Length: 327
Image 1 (tube, one colour):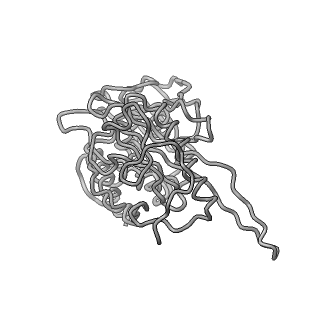
Image 2 (tube, helix red, strand yellow):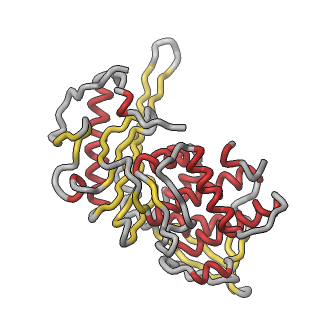
């Protein structure tokens, strides 16, 4: 059971012009790289209405956005096994062979809580912290199943099981951190990542790790406490209602970022003592950019304009081709 826990309209016509060009029925980012090969998608998370998209179905490298799947597998496992995130894990030998971000200086043999490893992985894109999480959880899954094998490989298989369950047909994970190597770095599409993020955003424990601008973490090294402040690599968090999710970059992936932002709920009195509450949240995915934060912020602003026009029109049904299919 533990091993399989991962497996646990009419067309809307725009009434208000936003001053953007259109392509394939979607508003297009004006100027810059976003209209020439960058992949992006803007989504209303409550209706799955795709407000804006370009090149969003094609498979491409995603660098450290991989860690979103890593985090969700860990959190799903913790919930399924009733394991507290205060549990201590040991940094495995394999972590010492991984390059890329190591912001808190983790080394094999160090002992760190799952919570602090998750914070460093998701906020500071810490590759060794991600490897530590995977090795610990993978070893537990193998042990519970009475099997031997490579714990990290077992964990990656769970990441791919999650992708399959969510209908992410253009996604393949090869490691837990997104670093490029002989086997590649894993790949996905903006559309698939939207499916993954919608699932992750249902989990309040996930949003805890992505919404902070900084957090104090610590670990034990041979009896000596090491403490650091990890800062979120997503510089947009904390502005414009943005409270997540993750950055990534590599030579083949370019600059990538996924952001999500909300607005205060709309509350309407129904006149019979009941109130209607409508939440508002958008998701923006940008892959292969040369200016990820500028383009993501611009797409978010355009997305709110399109969303507001739709709401003002009474939220009419959206054509099926502009609704993300989820699983």
